[in-house]
Figure 1 (cartoon, rainbow, N blue to C red):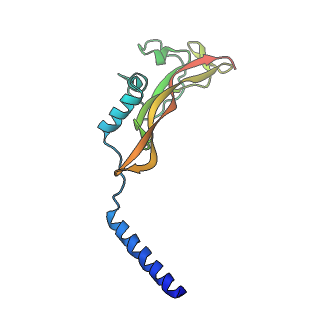
Figure 2: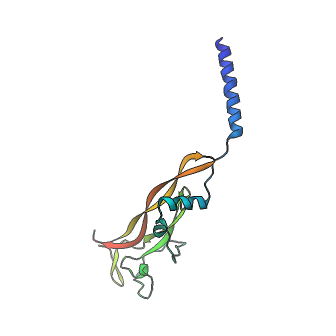
Figure 3: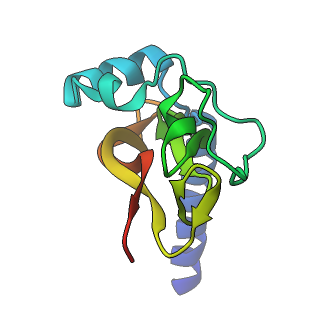
Length: 160
């Protein structure tokens, strides 16, 4: 009797497993348009916080200059705490790419030709709304939830 129950259970599980295999559809990301619409509904002002017009991120990270660039029209070059921009990329987030600032120096330029390392150059962080991918799959598409990440906007100088 116990053997019959075990065999029947095994047959039911095997049939169920094989029928599930044929019906399973892999989960995929929603379209860019759907993600754009979702974040637009949940955080209407996100464009103002994430998109930086007329900014080209560096392909290679820059280093601290020997002197301030006093001829540049860009505030990040003439600041006493110079910075540049790079791309922060996360395939599990929307938007996948966010342009963020990074500080070029550890110290600050109190004179045009000399970095003062007794001061600290530090990024100014702002909380920015993004959609984070979850493991949940509904109707063949991953679900995304609203969350916030800190994104460096520029660098400033302060005392330790």
